[in-house]
Amino acid sequence: MTQPELTPYPENSPQASLRLIALFIVCDGDVAEGEIDILERLGILETLGADRDLFAQVFDAYCDDLIAHAGTSRYVGLADRDWVDGVLAGVTDPDQRRFLASALLLVARSDGYFADAELTVYRQMLDRWGLDLDQLGAGS
Image 1 (cartoon, rainbow, N blue to C red):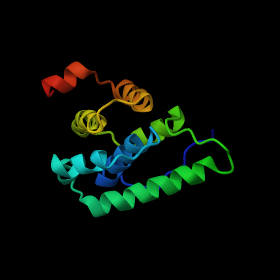
Image 2 (cartoon, rainbow, N blue to C red):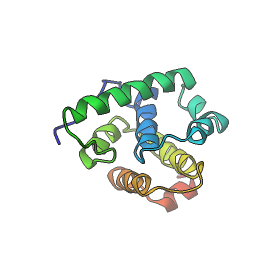
Image 3 (cartoon, rainbow, N blue to C red):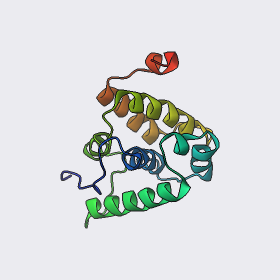
Image 4 (spheres, rainbow, N blue to C red):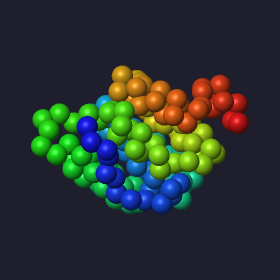
């Protein structure tokens, strides 16, 4: 795959974080309503300085970027390592990274199971950001 071209957002902006959430929700190929509802119910969107409308805008832009990235390919790697790294690069703040890692665990559980693609993306995120589950549980 080629280097990902993503809609430009400022580093650590609400949009950069929302794009990561969109990636995580889409990566298993099934957008569950519970995954989106939990973002509001637990105040995740509010904590990021966003609302459902901004999330919908970022989600749409993410899907457009994904389609453009796929080009004429017959296969779109929703959890492609280079693609995921491109999305992860938009979040550099350590506190924001820990918040998102914790929030995405809740999103993954909202539909009752952790899909293989979600697990792959989650592990890559922890690895790239130098986090582990113990750090998240300790709130450090």
